[in-house]
Length: 286
Figure 1: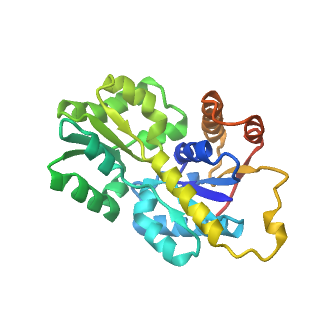
Figure 2: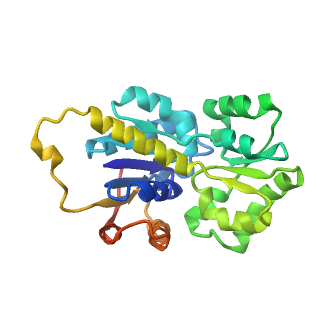
């Protein structure tokens, strides 16, 4: 089973990319909605939540955990890798591809305060952008996570708030924008409308999914099997979407949207599509 977690529903944008390339795997996704958003919270609090959730997923059979949250990656992934003996994949700041693609020499990064303070972002932006004279326009997307969590991803309110962050990037010459929070891909339609296609949107989720697949394959090859039962095919493909919060309506809506998009793109066979109809929604106390 592949475990994933985020402060809320945003990590479903990463799950979508995982489904595209690993549609037959079991998944257990946790939205830590009771503590959402992570962005303004302390590193200590985020590490505490990430540790408890990781322990929960491992106890339920996770072979690998995708930290589908930029803020949690910045605050906790180094500690998680030391605490637990399974692979962890985090959200990489996509500054490197943006810096390589820009023609104007200016890129925008839309992220949370916690992500901007993370050592991984600071190191990556210095190495691949600033040292190469690529200007970075940083904007903390205050309120955007809450918009997604409320289901208002294509509303006048969403457009006004996105415009507040995107317009200064365009005005300063940016031709690429990095989505530095897994919630933000759910606002991509609005971002494109506000930017009038003048910005190339860089979403790191596909690269993260490929990295997860490679690490999972490597882990399985190195595993020592003690029983032939380890090779038996599972009779039921299970996907669990869980939340620590009290409301699941938006989580269900965004999950359904991911499933419909996957079906529309024609990437899955009939049995794989059927398995997506077997999603279990649960509430947890972790």
